[in-house]
Image (cartoon, rainbow, N blue to C red; front, side):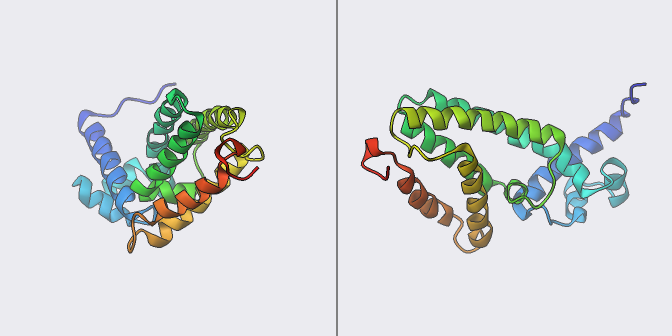
Amino acid sequence: MAPRPLRADAARNRDKLLAAAVDVFGRQGLDAPLEHIARKAEVSIGTLYAHFPTRQAFIDAIFPERLAVLDDIGAAALAEPDPWQGFVRFVEGTVGLQAQDHGLNDAIARRLQPSSEAVQVCQRGMGHAVLVIQRAKDAGRLRADFEPADLATLTWAMSQVIRESIDTEPDRWRRFLRFYLDGLRGTGDGGPA
């Protein structure tokens, strides 16, 4: 039996809550008080809990769409004529997404469990990453020993840099990422083997 559709006012409130959650979590991170979301959406806290009984319910509802941007980042990286620049574009795009959205950065830092839908979106993103990495390695532009799992570790490490410096040096991550990328250049670029 399919669930009954929401009344028009209930659907509007749900949409307002989702938009508010994207904004509040994006600015304050996943620990933001849910009261801030209700206030931003201009609904009562009871209305919030009627639609989203837990913080996890919000995360499950908003992050698959937020993570879907990885598809665009992957496509742009694969369209880049230079395989190294494609790799750099993919990594910078992924980490830049984290830096723009504190809630997403918290999720990437593995502080909360992703929904099955978010996991599927991440798996698609990893599929792009595998292609981008292999393309750069085949061209000799990326270290031969770099693996997709290393990208996951790098992304997690950058989430920590972002979390530690977001209030004092919001662009510090760019400097650190440059260090990492310079160390990943393949022998075709005069970098490490």
